[in-house]
Image (cartoon, rainbow, N blue to C red):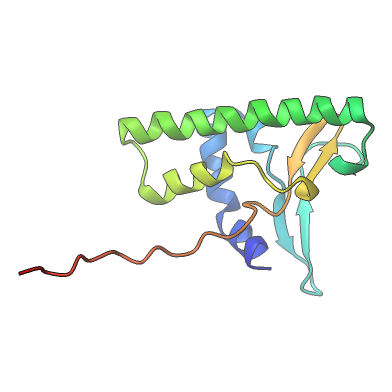
Length: 138
């Protein structure tokens, strides 16, 4: 649930970044998480069609979806690198793009009308980084 909660908190920011710097097609790569009345996390996509787990597809259809996924994740990773170099985003937004560009667990990938859609991203929720304060040496 920690991964889902992290995605619930950050989905809107990620969606805004992807639409602003890439296109709505990239925003559709990440399913929108929502908590149902019973507490279960449900994942939604703007794509129309029946979602099918990647691992249940035939080899050729799966290979095509994986190729699209690899291309889109590479574009997100390139965007992260470009924006990190020009210093135009906050550290939080850069971290969000960095995580979004990583390969997710295969069982969190669904395919809708040939397009990969990621649920439960990132594969593991990032842990807060403690500020490292070097000890004074004499």
